[in-house]
Amino acid sequence: MRKVEVNFGLNNYQILIGSGLLKKTGQKLKEIGFSDRLVIITSSTVKRLYGDSLKQALSKDNFHVTMLTVADGEEQKSLETAGRLYTELSEAYTERGTPILALGGGVIGDLAGFVAATYFRGVPLVQIPTTLLAQVDSSIGGKVAVNHGQLKNKIGAFYQPSLVISDTSTFKSLPPEEFTNGLAEVIKSAIIQDRGFFAFIEQNLDKIKSLDEAILTEVVFRTAKIKAEVVKKDETDLGIRHILNYGHTIGHAIETVSAFRINHGQAVAAGMLAAARISNKLGILDKNELARLKDVILSTALPTEIPNLDRKRLLQAIKQDKKVSKGRIKFILPKSIGDVFITDRVSLSQVEEILTG
Image (cartoon, rainbow, N blue to C red; front, side, top):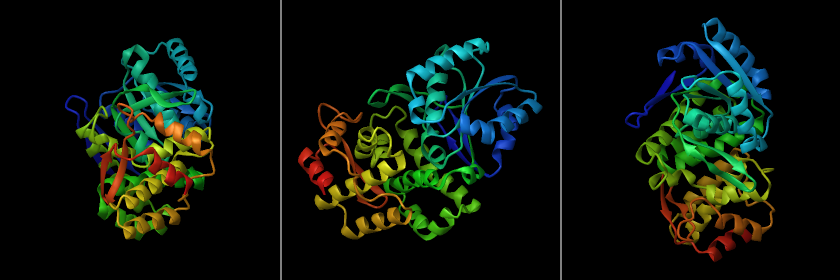
């Protein structure tokens, strides 16, 4: 088992990473002071795969467990679903000290985290991510949110969990495209801060794709460590934390315009290459570095080109990005692999040139 310490002064917690950790959830909860009632929020699919067995194991550890289930899909990350969960929490006599366990992928982590942050003005939250994407990204750093219409992640809070339990054996139940989805965030983390980790990914792609347990534990550990180090410097996303959005300015626009038919990893992969091409055209990123990035993304079967979507709508969505400040769009551009910078000097014409290819 690997461990990442996340320190925010009073809000400190651990990210536990390894195979088979779900079986140790009760023990880990008792170690941080939980001993009685708890609520699991999960999706229909994850309930079948892991929820029922986790509830049974926690009951044997003398926890009184309530399980709340939502349907699968991004559309569940809504105020409407949150409202239903508030009602169910009330009906289950949930108290202010009752922890909510978010068991599932990014949608469940965001939704359950938002509910935990707002119910009773905050109840304890334990993230138990079951996808690669959630383990390396959305479960870390305290961002919780729901969508509203075309607004993605704009209604939310910063709310740190008490613990994150990342069981890498859950990857075995993921559809191949869902696992690949998470690789985009792994690659992103290496590009923004760790050139050596990027080389590790290049050298171990076959083992990563074959779900080698030791390699995957290392991948999740190093990616989580990068994010934790960035978030520690800027918990509320006012400065350096923006680098975690490399590839997301265009990526989120792709998701929105496609009505989320294009998944997050695919959108971010295309967004990363687009940002890298902008940097190359500005004379910043070397063409050989751009080629390395493209080769790695190609090797994971993620897209390297902007999907066939309405370019005017894409531009409009980019203008509405949450990083827009005083009317200027903030881009994260790579100087080289392992080194990025934040700029608001990219013009709309330069973006349009990349979008139209």
